[in-house]
Amino acid sequence: MNAVALRPAVPADSEFCFQLHNAAMGDYVEAIWGWDDEAQRAYHERGFDPERWQVITVDGADAGTLVVDFRETEVYLGRIELHPDHQGRGIGAR
Image 1 (tube, helix red, strand yellow):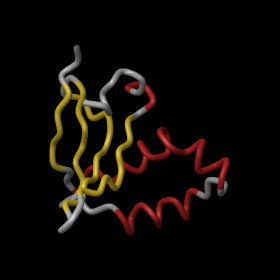
Image 2: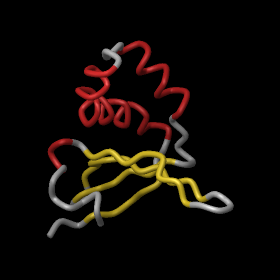
Image 3: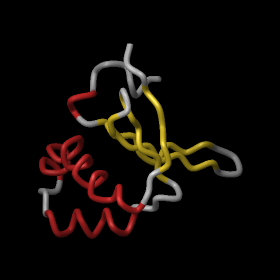
Image 4: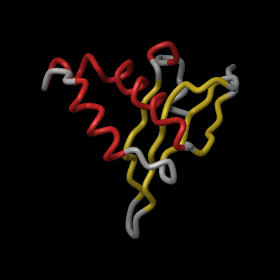
């Protein structure tokens, strides 16, 4: 079984998170809206907040992102993305 952990995101993770989003969700975005790299980068830059984001690691390597908001009456899963190389292994379920 792989060692799965979370670490706080740092500003330097922005490009990793953008590239991960492209790898994990790019085909879906393309099919629905069309992938516009400039628009997607702008969207990412508006939403990327290292104080709220976490990086999912698998065996010490960055493999995904997780954003969870703890609200007054709910816990909101804002984002969970895993690189396709790590999908289908139960990592997200853990």
